[in-house]
Length: 366
Image (cartoon, rainbow, N blue to C red; front, side, top):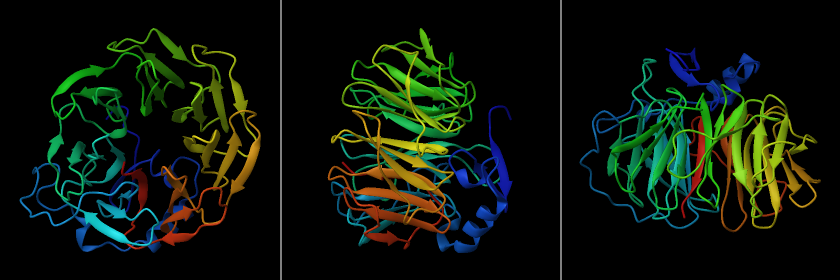
């Protein structure tokens, strides 16, 4: 199967760049440690009403998601768990419509989008399940064009774009619709991240071709590709000044490109080791999640100087997110946990373990 970076362990398919602790040169010991910490729950097998069966007929008893609630995708037992913003309370567990979740995102209306990588047999049965605010069964399921979903991005109109690593495509869907509108193939090779700039240009990070393809609004052919300084790009983010930051896993670097300039980037390498994820804050700081040295390194966006490094509470990190108040959440895979940090804090306020089983993605309710 072309373009599918699958590795098998204990009978499960592993999308290796999201379950990063089994990727390439990482020690098998990390996997064994993570597995030893994980117990298969009753919901280990997706229930009826999952991706192939549509929404289950269940009565919803949950209140809508509150702003700042934290949602975590659990690979091992095919669930999404929700927690209060302070991490003190587990709010709900979503099982219906979940099958090896690999990506999470909220739209502006509070709908939760879950990218399901596929079945344990190793064959793709990929979908995107869409949950209304506070719901535990999907309102609709997107199937058409979905093939190994890795990341989501929303256009200003609410149009959904999905990076399909398995098919090396980016697919687009209307606001509130499951109908496939367009498929972008040209310039796509193992897409792992998507982001829009303020002008509506779409940027796609291609793991396979070491590039970032740029698509003007409504276009499916990229007039430009960023290649200079790119090496296995895992994450993209824009800061308030319109500068593009690219996390380059293979180069242990973050490259920064001025608006409209795709060459001669500035580069951050200090304390960057295997960068996985990026956050640009309203306070003008860049957060970088590092796999190899298991840290979050924070930089001034004005000077690119290192401000501080968070290491306590981080072990085999897979994802991070920040709420509107600046509270940071880091998902760890060995053992399964989410560390919660106060704004500007370097030690976790608390560590969430209840309801976690191989966390690979985090999303914050708007």
